[in-house]
Length: 367
Image (cartoon, rainbow, N blue to C red; front, side):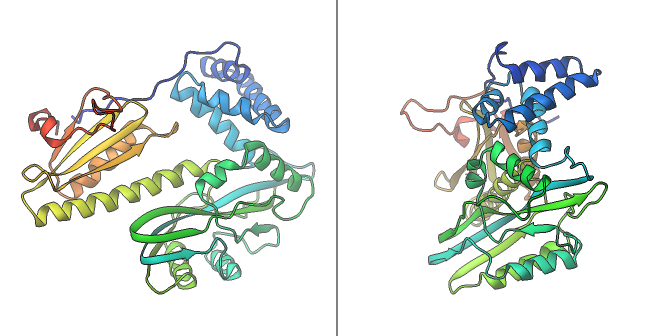
């Protein structure tokens, strides 16, 4: 059985003065009583209506366990993304986003603009494939946003924008921060998101959330690569399934890091096999919430590279480890060395500590 890596994140002691966390813990300890969930929903909604973003953020950061954090985050997502509200006439506004994973490289500096050159063509393609309904009650922005820009818009701002449409407004009632992408050098992995809003009748679904992107994803990839084509630019676009503007950020971030790890691992494994011997890997969790990987040749120290996965509050260490090891095993890397204990963030020299292949014996590996 594979040894699971330890969780290096530290959780705070329960703060009894934190009203949101009191609601969360009440729900967790009395999950069989529906009124505890209703009370939590009302508390989160009141915080959003009154713009208490600092209180919401503090509650998330002060959660005493991952389960408590996830429960609060789920309620926040459902409210902001419009899953639990409806107008008196039975209509509901829903915020959604289309995440795009971009693998891009260029010999000379190239800029991918922060707006789609032809947003109407992208909208028509999504409607043709049934991802979006052919309806005048759907608005899709042509502005590309990165994840930090999405995070910079407060939860209450997203919520109140959704409410303004819920209460009879039109279009997307907020200005989105544009995020052009400057590409130079070897291929890197990036995330850009298109934000939309749909006004649905009760029981109606104008946006296909979740699922997979087969079929329409490839078609949209070809369309966007054509629109963004520039001399010297190498670009591959991977559209991800539609999701809520809050709920989908974790999946988009995870996928971006997963693709970055795939690019790192495949490149490094090829270098080692073209050089000396078979590759080996060390996986270790470090203080500060990072999973660090050393991948390279046992025989040739110059053929060793490192990768860092900074764990978000929503990441599961076991899921990240499983993803990494599954890829390494698919690439026929059999020497995978796992470190049982959480390691320091810094070494004796004050630099980030990476455990090298020479520091973790092969007989410590668990297969």
